[in-house]
Image 1 (cartoon, one colour):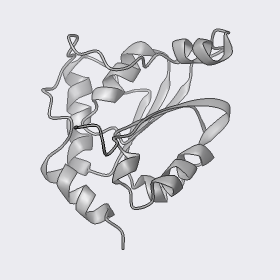
Image 2 (image 1 turned 135 degrees about the vertical axis):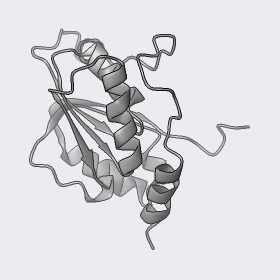
Image 3 (image 1 turned 90 degrees about the horizontal axis):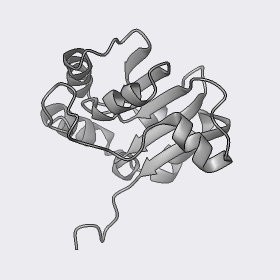
Image 4 (image 1 turned 180 degrees about the horizontal axis):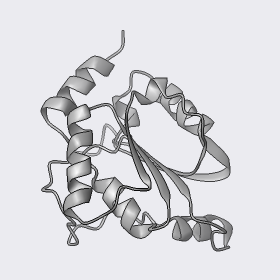
Amino acid sequence: MSNTPSVQAQYTACPYPPLEAGELPHIHPPAATWDFAHYYCSHRHAPQEPHILDAGCGTGFSTLKLARANPGAKITAVDLSPTSLQLAQQRLKAAGISCENIHFLQADLAQLELQETFDYIYCTGVLHHMPDPTAGLAKLKAHLKPRGLMTLMLYNPHARH
């Protein structure tokens, strides 16, 4: 049995992260710069602006930081919760970021079927909520370009001890 409806209900009722809209320059997430990640892995600067998938974007904090770090990127921000996606759009608007190159999509990552692949997939705090995290990772990998990069963050059972 899938726990997707309960996860969707949780994040629709309590969008995450519960941060005020706007720039939030005092909060610094892990490096979200495509050129940095590309150079770190290949020892070469990135040849072009990336196409980024923000998988499980929540209320848009990661989307905000990805957009700021990669101003010419095309970003697809996906989340299960429509409430979170509304807040994400408000966050970017309050920060003065144009959403011209950002596409927001309400979808379940386990069912994700996009007609495009991505240079960079950013997915933090999401896969461990899925009924089958391995299948979720495989779904993301299927949307990654050859030689593309993926940043993942998962909670672990010992993280709070």
